[in-house]
Image 1: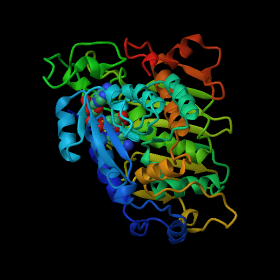
Image 2: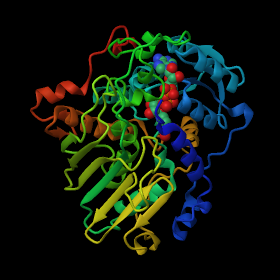
Image 3: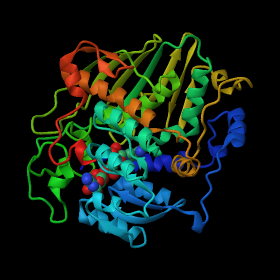
Image 4: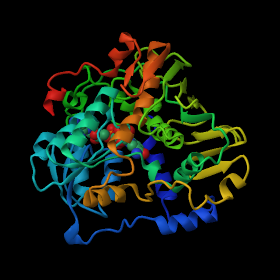
Length: 444
Ligand SMILES: NC(=O)c1ccc[n+]([C@@H]2O[C@H](COP(=O)([O-])OP(=O)(O)OC[C@H]3O[C@@H](n4cnc5c(N)ncnc54)[C@H](O)[C@@H]3O)[C@@H](O)[C@H]2O)c1
C-alpha cells in the first residue's frame, strides 16, 4: 500500500503543535502576541467530559480520537471493518463496538463524534449525526462533491450543530501568521498565490481478490458504484481513486487551498474561473484520480491561484528531491516580495516582511492553537469553530472545481454566489454524483 498523508501529517502535527515559543522560525513579536491571544484549551475535569464516538477507526480516526481523549470519553467506536473496530475498542478502554453508524447514532448518551471515514462517507454520516443532535469533528476533505457541501452547511445551520473540519493547519501559528500578514496588506498588491501539492501515485493495474473476512466491502463502498474488491481501492489508498476521493488534489488541496482562501480573504466564497489539466495519463486498471496536474484559478479580486502537483514530494508529504527543489506549501506573492508557508516553516523574500510587527489597529484573526481543543471549546460555547462547516465546504470546493476541470479538460466559469457553473449544463452535472441505494441523502 502506498504511504499516505496520515503518518507524515501526524509526525509533523505533533512537532509543530508543540509550544509556540519553541517554534524558532516565528518572529518574536508574533510569539509574544500569540501568548496573550491563546485560547484556553485545557483538558476538562473528568466530570465535565462529554461522551464521544469514533466512526471510521483507521489511521487518522484513531489519531483524532487520541487527541480528543484529553477532552472527552470515547465510549463507542464504529467501523465496517471488524478488525479496525476491535483494535480501536482496545485502544479506548473497551469502547462499545458498532458496525452500523445508524445504530450508534440512536444513543442519547453520545454527544459528539469524530468522523474518520473515507471521503465518500463523510457527508451521509455527518448529516445523519447532526440530525440526531450530535456535534461533529469531521476529517477533511469535508465532502466528495460540492452538492454535499451545500447540504451540509444547510443542515448544520438548521440543527445548530457545531461542525469542525479537520483542516488542522488553521490552528497552526505559522499558517495564521502568513495569512494575517497578507490580509493586512504586508505584500503590496497581492497578485498570485501558488499552492503546491505532493503528486499522487500512478499505480496499477490492480487485481481483484477475495474480501477479507472482517470487512463488509458492500457497506464500505456506500454510495459509490459497486465493484469487486481490489485491495488498493480500500484502506488508506482509497484517496487515489476518483470514485472515493479526488487524489492529492483533494487530500492535500483541502489543506493548502484552505490556506490560500484564508490569506486571500475568500474563505466564504470561491474563484470565478478554473482551468485544469492532467500532466500525465493514468494507467488503465490503476488509480483513477489524476496524479500530476496543473490548475489555474482567478478570483473576482484579480488574484490568481495556481494549484499544481510537484513530484519532488511523495504523496505522504515527504521530500525526496534535491535541496532547493520546491516543496509543498503555499506562496503568496505581491509586487514587492513573497511569503511562503508550509508545515514547520515560514519564509519571506525579505526578513522584515515577517519581523515587522502588525500595527495595533491591524485585523487579527480568530486564533486557535489546538484544533481538537477548539472543537471542544465550541461545543461548550456554541460559537463557530475555527474551521466551521462553511469554510470546510468552500475550501474543498476549490479542489472539486479543479478536479472537475481536469476531468472535463477545459476552462470553466464559476459563480461562487450561486455555486453553479455559468451557462454550462455539462459541468453542472458534476456538482453531484449518482448515489447507489440505499446510501442516498434520504438515508440521512
Ligand atoms: N487532517 C489530516 O491531516 C488527515 C490526515 C490523514 C487522513 N485524513 C483524512 O481522514 C480520513 C480517513 O483517512 P485514513 O487514512 O485514516 O483512512 P483509512 O482507510 O485508514 O480509515 C478509514 C476507516 O473508515 C472505515 N469506514 C469506511 N466506511 C465506513 C462506514 N460507513 N462506517 C464506519 N467506518 C467506515 C474503514 O473501514 C477504515 O477503517 C480521510 O478523509 C482522510 O483524508 C486527514
